[in-house]
Figure 1 (tube, one colour):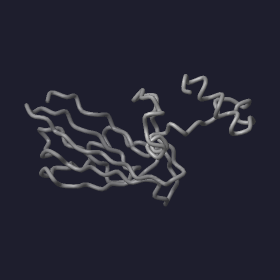
Figure 2 (spheres, one colour):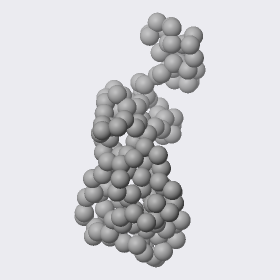
Figure 3 (cartoon, helix red, strand yellow):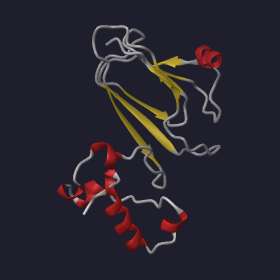
Figure 4 (cartoon, helix red, strand yellow):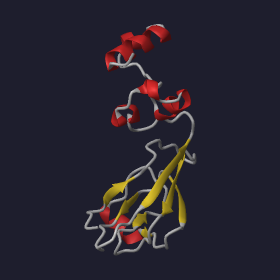
Length: 157
């Protein structure tokens, strides 16, 4: 309640003409309305962000009851209106992307858990085992050596 909304953005940063790189899903746990801070979508899949006027003139407002599900292209520009009501407007947000697209957040670092307490598949899904090189030197290291160096640098066993 009293939230300020979210700015215009896309959920999938990969932009390839005529190619679906990702799909977003909103599972509404509460009613979505203009008052509760509904999500708005620009109806045209485009690479460049629409101007504020273009967005305002064309935006479609997702007004729906709790329990509804909304699927949308990850490249659709959207925002969230401010929540002017006195109750929460909650949703579960899911993203389905092509397997070669990497997550945009370092979840392993964000949750700060000890990786050894997590199941191997859970570690993989959360990105604990995703150790991209941070320099040309690391890129050319043998993969096992790079893994060891990066894990040690992160303070993991």
